[in-house]
Amino acid sequence: MNRRAIAAFTLVEMLVVLAIIASLVTLLLPSLATVRAKADSIKCAGNMCQIGAAVNLYVSDHAERTPIIEPWPSQPVYSATDGAQTMLQALGPYGVTAAALQCPSDLKGPNFYAKEGSSYQWFPGASNQNTHSITNFAPRMTNQSVTMTLSQLMLAFDYSGVHNGQYNVLYGDGHVAAGD
Image 1 (cartoon, rainbow, N blue to C red):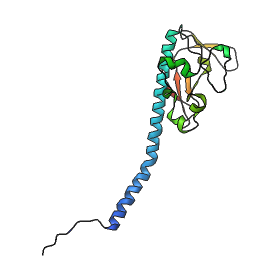
Image 2: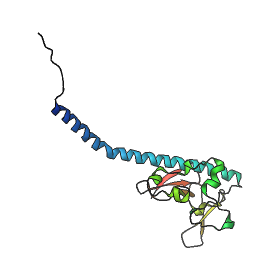
Image 3: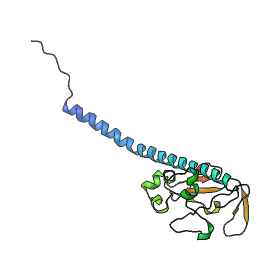
């Protein structure tokens, strides 16, 4: 009787293959975390671009002036008569949704969204600015004002440096850049 040889792996060979696979997974996990963090930062920047587009629509409907948005809704900076609103109240009619105000990195970390209603803080110096003649007080602690362009006017930024110690910053012309 002619027997055919059956090809099979031995237990030792299987354990070696599993050890190699486990080693590769261990090597790949840190880079996977880096990719996930970068994806969160990109989603955050996309959210901020949506906020920037809504601000531009708001400005066109309100005599070229930026909205007055409360930077710390849980601890208001403005008085009740200033007309300050939350970001969602001011920009909701222009397409900003609650989801667009949620930075994925913030939700995993400090979660300012739960406390403030947004993962992004409005820069107080951007409130009620005339976009054709933007002035800002500089240097700090003086009464000197400087004129700036929309690309220099900071509108909003992450409440905390949730992107590996960096912040995404939204500027008046709608561009988003990373900052320290």
